[in-house]
Image 1 (cartoon, rainbow, N blue to C red):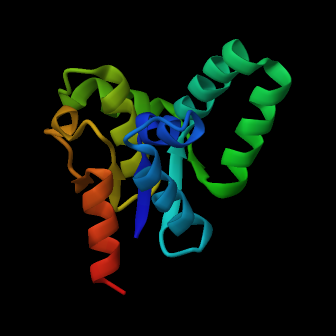
Image 2 (cartoon, rainbow, N blue to C red):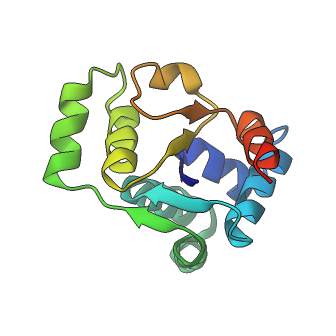
Length: 139
């Protein structure tokens, strides 16, 4: 299973946001252990760097980004991704962009805490707890 992680799930781990941290960290562990193939969008990388640089400085932000890129594949944002996002009909362009990047990168699912924002998705969309259960049921 190749899963694109929404930015909010990544931030749950990096910022240790409760009550979401534990489940998101378990998903990261599944990626690290190769139980699932993890994917993040290029825009997630830029968002993380921007937020981390403001919070902890550019040097530590770069460390966070390097760690993410070591763990996850990065779904590029190309003209095709942008065009598809414009046509998808999502209410939020960023969500449409993540969806199209996932789709064009061969993802088989998306994990997010905002499933309702992906109502028009062509891929299965999981809340983090539901993804944990789905992975456990295939083992």
